[in-house]
Length: 614
Image 1 (spheres, rainbow, N blue to C red):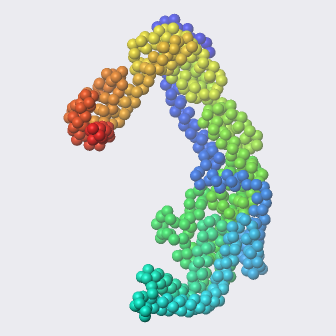
Image 2: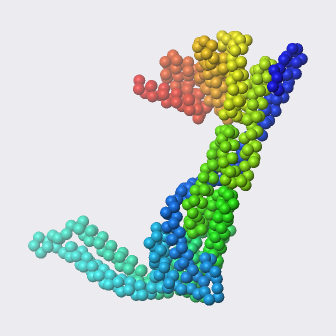
Image 3: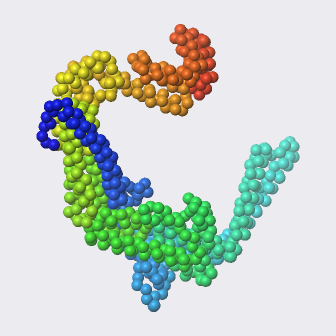
């Protein structure tokens, strides 16, 4: 492989070309395997870290969580310690204390501690809202009696106001004894009528409220509202707050009063099993929503919430153990799950600043590896893998190291085969192998030097330069385009005159324009839009309009729409002769054959506007 190839006979030349052709086919097959390997590695990196490919639901919450300040984490820890203390006083079977037979609840002490939680910004006034719900539930009857007295006084005032307004309206129709005219205008009377209507509406509202203030109705209503509040807290992943609300509810009611109304769930909840998107849900592992079950009792809701809390406690213990064992990828994966499923749990919010930074740095390194894999920067991959393995011996990076070591060698092998193809005179295979080598290791210095050497040798090939000049002189834009890999280095060489370069570039652009037109007309033909395809072919530059590929398509299309072509030619001929009216008439005939042709419609509008102006 490292010895120069000596070709002395035609047989040797043919054998070498066959071998190089086989190498080229092998390189193309290997390229497909390489793409699959890159995709597999990227998938592994994505599963190992949210920092590589972050789900849409994660970036803000997850990144802000990892970047929280140490002081904020300490304040959160104090808040959650108080919150757990409230739960321990309220529930004998709290997940945060060892259960004994002597445990009993102390709602009064829990209520006193609950009032202090509102001083913490983490609480968001939820504790104050719980206290308000408790007061509303327990003091509803007294409040109703007080409100009934207020409504009665308001009704008396409104009745007097209504009588006054009706008297004023009546008197506005009485004529003056002196001149016999009324004292008010119709607009003034209408204003008084509107005031009377407003008073009647306020009276009706007060009477409706008074009817609804029976003790039985308001107690049930307030219970229903409290149940809704419990479920809303659970949906927000505020499991401890929801469990505290359940405890206070339990201390206020007994027996059948512990039933949960199915209507307490958010509006739009369908029947169970319907699969509607409006189903209330909480996030599960991986971000997939898990429907919140329709629980029929407060006891069932407490069991659901306690299971969620216990899951969070176990997950926090697992994260701490993973960090101790330097299993950073697994720790980050579990942490991502907790951000989705236990956003307001103390187990998540009290993770230390150092632990968060350790996980964040691990995620950044994985993201850097992902970027290096995309860029095929194998030296950077090896450096990052060594850095990760130094801190995390069980990181499982062996496949990445193998990947980074294998492909620079393969790229150099393909570059060497390209050099042999050049010496054998197989320029097409040489170009193909060079492209594969560059795509495989674009940043590898050894490969780059070998490719540069090949290109320099190719550029110094006088025969190829002579051939290029002949093709450019003949104006063969098709061959110029098809052999770009051979001719571009020559055309851009410092030894080549600028006129040859400019002429060659014009030929390339000409072929590009032709191929774009062919693709466009092929697309129009496949859709059955033959007139549009014909117009596209007739708008091509004069330099390529007689190309055999264009003429072949014109002949094929002309069979499909002869009437349109005839009308189109007549219209364009009249238009060139400044006979706008005749041109317009023929364009209208063409439009009959192609009713939705935008080019024809544009011409008609333009000619019609010119005719109207003249």
